[in-house]
Image (tube, rainbow, N blue to C red):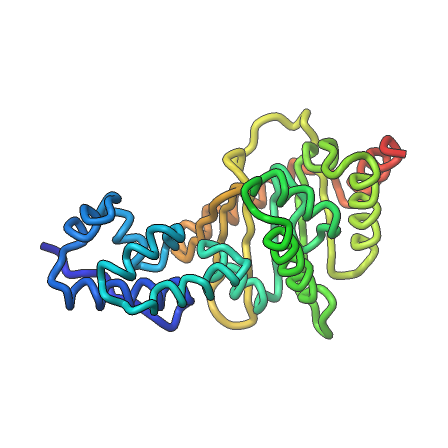
Length: 274
């Protein structure tokens, strides 16, 4: 039997929760499968909880607390995790993002969070998280707006974004909201640290059609990559795989319109929402 993976309780609240679950489970003398059978859920979910990769639903957390004799500790910790608006799978990436000196992004479906208006962000979050309450949505919007402080710092990172044409053509938040968002893109593109390119539909297939991609570079330390869909993301730290994504990004830059021509396309799309 392989040795259990090492846990780092300091990595996040979710990791602390997972470490607590494992400690209590081992003390109770149960395997992950035996604990999962008691709830009941698949033992693989127990493994994900313990690794901090997934946070259980409220009812499952409550059952874990009772079964493991946590005396309310797991429930209390779960509440703190849910109050943190950034999803588990995005927290490490957000920490990396805050220290980056250069960000290269390809956005397949939506404006990057660092360049979103409040209205645009709110519309995206409402459609993608229909079960969330208004306060939960507003907490997510606030967290997204706070992240944008990165671009207003004394030495902001270079942010180079390639936007698929779908990003500027698909209305989000109604016509007025879409126009406001495109105006904001044009305004940000006038700053020296933000560069925008549009990848037109007529360029056909390309090497990053599976979703959005971000490459982060740092003053010290190796580059990392991050792939993302609406409900999940993957942080890639393998140097070989990051290099493959960097090459793919170079090919995208060659296919995309030059920055000046891209701003003309964005301006034209904005005027269509008048």
